[in-house]
Amino acid sequence: MGYRVVVVGATGSVGREMLAVLSEREFPIDEVAAVASSRSQGSEVEFGDTGRMLKVKNIEHFDFAGWDIALFSAGSEVAKAFAPKAAAAGCVVIDNSSFYRMDPDVPLIVPEVNPEAIAGYVAKNIIANPNCSTAQMVVALKPLHDAAIIKRVVVATYQSVSGAGKEGMDELFEQSRNIFVGDSAEPKKFTKQIAFNVIPHIDSFLDDGYTKEEWKMMVEVKKILDPKIKLTATCVRVPVFVGHSEAVNIEYEREMSAAKAKSILREAPGIMLVDKREDGGYTTPIEAAGDDATYVSRVREDPTVDNGLAFWCVSDNLRKGAALNAVQIAELLGRRHLKKG
Image 1 (cartoon, helix red, strand yellow):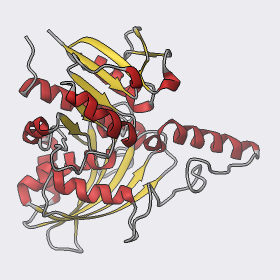
Image 2: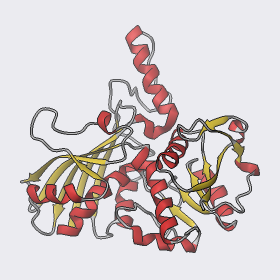
Image 3: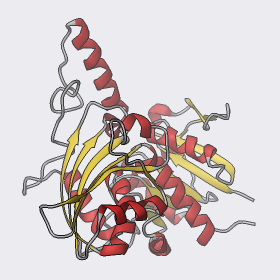
Image 4: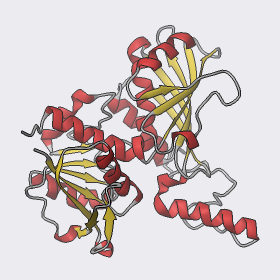
């Protein structure tokens, strides 16, 4: 006996990936519905690579009663308007937007990191999915924190354009093509040219000089992993289609050698350690694209602080950073709270 699952935002990059991951992982489904805005009503999306096409329904008229789980990937405004309606109808919402992440009554879940927190979903019938850059990093931080207690994290992210949706991917493609043929490469989606460039600006600026993307990493790590951890982030958009990369520096309370860290990471759930100190002995976004793992490379001790460590972390942001994590939450929910059969 399976679940009745709704994918909201099914026509977007993450929504399509959610459908693909549900199919790939053989999530127990009796019925699946593709839902989006009125603009997409009547169009079709494929359920994974099954060849089965789903006709898109208009969220304005969709009745969530009788559905078990709704995976939302349609932005904060849609989540604000429709997640409470779905939750009130008895459908558990797993939301990919930032709207509910810092709500104290909504658990913020990465299954490899804080699975026990999912029990808190009963307060509002809503579970939040973290920011893509946060999700991959905490998977790597968790086993190391358990071993030596992390005091402080300094991270610089190198985030792909798919994090800005289809418009971001289209802009990188079009600008790159235009530059090669001598046409204009004026920015539309991004604040500056993204092709052959990097932009140290993701989301809006806050009064303290950080961007909202950087703030998300700071507060989400505290909520998911440990409120005592101090974190500073610099988030950068780079001309890569899929896959976020991060340069992470950690300061621990106790000693943590590179050898010990690598030993821990080799056994950690969701982690693939690729760390050979030779040309090409590390992972880049191209290798991570389409894969479920969070890759860690270049693990080394940081001699500038006591008990310091540095590493490189790469993951497919459309998967672990969004769709895969949401489906893993649904799997965890099913195992622990919504058992069928």
